[in-house]
Image 1 (cartoon, helix red, strand yellow):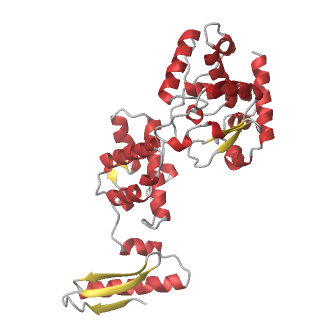
Image 2 (image 1 turned 30 degrees about the vertical axis):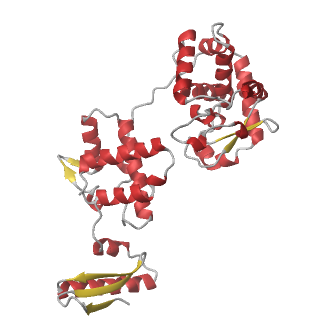
Image 3 (image 1 turned 120 degrees about the vertical axis):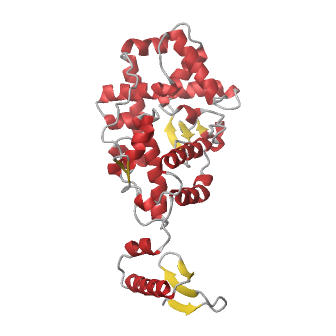
Length: 358
């Protein structure tokens, strides 16, 4: 049980020792006997609630020093963010943190974020308003808020805070539609058959569209995250599998390697790595192909090309998502890890059939 005694060494202080339900035995001191007695009674009450299995978070929030934004963000940076291997991920989180601090300030209490009114805007609506004034798009603002939510969720789960200061209802109700490339039949035919393209350029396009993976997942060099580089040890010719390291995944995933891709990879075995270059060089290659074919497209548009052909051929958004290893639909999100190699093979057959119909 909690104990309250005069401090043995500092006679003008009162020493309170109590058992925190999450952090164990803790002690603190008070100058005022009245404050010490009130705190003692509250901690005794909290201990009794814990023993009877009742919730105590509402009382803990009143007993502990309120956390500021700087408190939570600094704790997250020290305990979680520094452990993230990808430097771009760390940079993106720091950008979101700095944006939140710029609007609210380091000393703003976390527990009051959603309740405080600023210039007629309440809570996160003020953050959205201020970021829009700086010319930031709504999707970028939402991205910052989602990252902030990840941080606060960590703090909440780790009992650093006792209520969530940001919720789903704080996000925009209406985001501007994403504009993305819709491939036309004549563009697809040109892309795969243009006479000005070199053999390597045609092979590169074929590999990326057939596999449907992200650009960085096939690269032999990745300075930001070298553990995600693709080396020959990750290419299994015997079992027709390429083991890639997807986004936000520390484990490698098996991707089916069609025979046509296998032929190309075998040609590339003369190089030290399957794609023996960096992302910046790959962008230059794609830009050159774009200029030769007079088709405006990006690396990511090659993923869209496969998903659009699969959706058109099958009428299934879920299969389109599976074809590029995306978790966007609820079914794929829940069952992506269980997608069999046979399913991947069937999808590749559908993709090749749709190409032949162009």
